[in-house]
Amino acid sequence: MAVIRLYMTMSLDGFIAGPKDDADAPLGIGGGRLFNWLDRRDDPGPNGQVVAEAMATRAVISGRRTYELAGRWQGDHHDGVPVFVLTHEAPDDPPGSIRYVTDVHECAALARAAAGDGDIMVHGAGAAQALLRAGLMDELELHVVPVLLGRGRRLFDDLPDHIELEQVRQLTSPDGEEAAKSVTHLRYRVRRPSPA
Image (cartoon, rainbow, N blue to C red):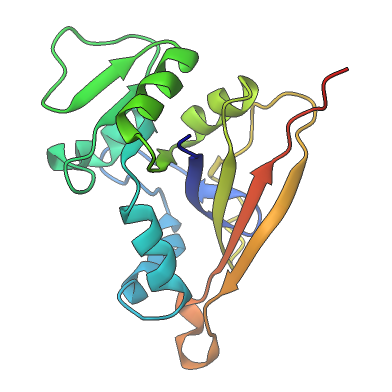
């Protein structure tokens, strides 16, 4: 079965965008710093490995806000994979391979069916929180950048009381002269509660 995995870059203090993020400044004030590591995505090291894994996913679940702020990825996130936008209100005429879905369970089921035996990439704090609350998120791939933004948009603001995670991988890009591009990639598996 396809793994539903969040791919999210964040500051050490938990922000995924700086303050005042909007259509004109999708990453907010100072938020662009979080993505310096992507300048090294073609490297044969950890950053390139993580990007290659993300681009091998076979479907995308995105929150509506993330989808809109990303310019709707100009109609194609990667390789024409189906994109399912989790939203409170679906427009009447979604473009191309985009499907708006209002129910988190239906969204996950549609994405799993579309991905087949491939994995599913999740983008956006709202979508991630909805999937975690519903018990549908399988893994979190967090790209932690060594910077403290101090304020902005947080990744985990609206969660249930307690979610246990198991770390399954840690990859670190080198520092040195490229310190502004360093990042630690952490992968966690979401632990499911044992049946009573």
